[in-house]
Amino acid sequence: MSSIRIDTLAADGTVLHCDISASADLDRFFSGEALEVRYDVPIEDVPEGVLAIPVLAQICPVAWTRGADVYVDEVDATFARALEDVKASLLAMHDFLDGGRLYARRVVDADPDAGGESALLFTGGVDSTCSYVRHREERPRLVSVRGWTIAPDARDDEKWDAVRSRVSRFADERGVETDFVEANMLSFLDHPMLLAHFSRRVDGGWYSSVGHGLGLLGLCAPMAYARGVEDFYVAATHWEGIDLEWGSRPDVDEYVRWSGTRCHHDAYELTRQERVDLIADYVREEAPGLELQTCNVRMDGNCGECEKCYRTAVGLRLAGLDPSDHGYSFADGDYREIRRSFERGEWILGEDERHMWADIRERVRETEPRSTPERAFFVWLEGADLEGLVAEAESPLHHRLFRAGARNAPVTVYDAAYPALKAVKTGVDRVRSR
Image (cartoon, rainbow, N blue to C red; front, side, top):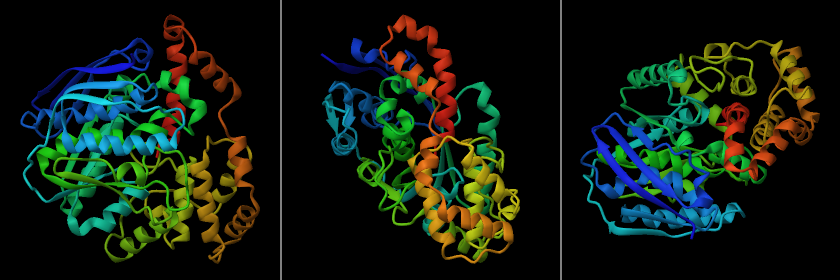
């Protein structure tokens, strides 16, 4: 019978350590590493049922691909109910998920201290900055997670240091607290193998399309319990009217909860450009020196040349701001570079980027261009076939064939191919991550 079992669960100071075992049909989706999560706050006094949440949030979606059962000694009762709701949403979203049951020796209602705190997953990008602006009167804790776009190994230490410095500076200037969570969830999961099996069924990586709403929030549960966080916000990537298979949506995040904490999918009623507009109002009223960080190429600033940098810079100009004042080196000549990059298929794009450029196009129709190059770009964007541009920018055929071959390869064969597939996948998924 398909199953996953949590074998050990240990809290040592600020570190959570979890070992699991899986049946043969699921074992290949795990690397053999233990899940380790590091917090800024001691978690030894957090109830065992809450300590189980980070690992359950990673393994349950994998179990659901095979209709497998998951076994744990103790689980928080509120989170156990939340898993059922999240499972129903993900099964409705993805036809390759079959469900499964959670079995626990003890289902416990924890009794947290009512701290009245709020928290926000924060990167400093458009979405999370918009959510901070919306909830700044609550003075939410800003929580940054290492493990998705920044790997928890020495090669990425410099990037993580840049994130910590930038987020800490943002928080200090506003008198709010921070928490930094470090986890190895993508090397605990065999993410390339999950991709090899399911990439044809999702728009992006496993974590993007299936796992990251439940996964990232779940990683934060012990910290939130220890800090007395009652409301936990995660900024929306998409907005009303966009129905994409994406791991963080209202019908996922709004269901995530555990004793003492409810999670909220924030600003879903606003398009991305409307979020930029809200940030622009905040800049004019309170924060003239605000700099955004949206680049996935650099973490110590913005490269100014990738699709996401260009898209954000155009949005800032449409909101009446000078991108150069807010973290982006951008001039009129860059409009021609954007068009060239689109037409040459230089960017790996998906349906979400198509919607975001369509959102920009709607605002362009309402905006008077400020220069001849801007006017020429507006005219081109008005007539551009965004759906065609996205289709032409899909992953190269040899990447797709490589993944298809790995999908049914014996483990010994796959292990030999793993480094090459991992290199391909890491590059694609980090570019695509929000």
